Image 1 (cartoon, rainbow, N blue to C red):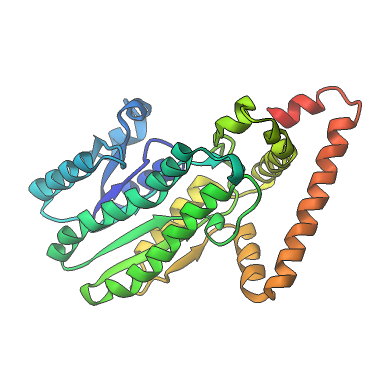
Image 2: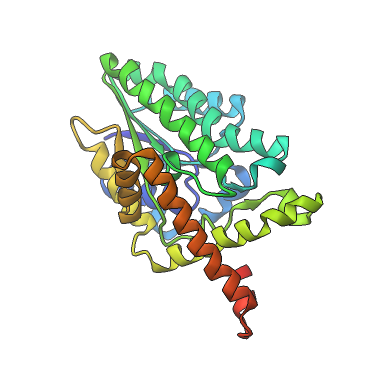
Length: 303
């Protein structure tokens, strides 16, 4: 029976992964910030699987990370799997991104996972090995307007994971990146809009409003049309955990596979032009929808 720690386990991919691993017989430690744990209170599926813990964890707080791992060591004496899933998404034009927004984006998506990995390694060595899953995104290898902060955090996580993949191999500690694209979930729609865009603190932020609307439209369309789900990502994580020699990167959704193929095999200049053409086409569609006298179109776009 593996001991598995999952961050951001109160909803979305984290919750779906917890359900899947509990079904497979693992002892799962579900963690989330205190204010999010009420989502798990009385959850029916947890009643079927007594081999679990629910623990508060703000991944940004060193004391909480260390106290939790000390508790795991005292009670189990081992940690076999760490799944870094907790993340936050900021939507912001780079020019007007506030300092606290940049820091929060990197703290949650990059610094906190690395610190949790560093704190977990002694336990994994004690167990004779382990497996670290870092939940990334297609944004880990590409970026679009107003999503630069999020993409930067995932790019950084991927670079660190690639180094760790080689650094930790001699201790039988595996590193895997899970890279989903769009899934049928509201995670992207719940992105935090930068204060500069949300309140229009600077007159020039109006120049970015169309780009923001454009990406909102893209996200809404993609999440509505995709067949991929949180459960699909959870199944992929479970499969990777059972591989003797897991790959560093696992692409989950069709769009992520297409984007990755284009990024890897097209010459850079052609890829950049292709993306620019696609974005211009999307912008034209959004502009047309904003000017068309159709009831409900404006509300639909901004919802």
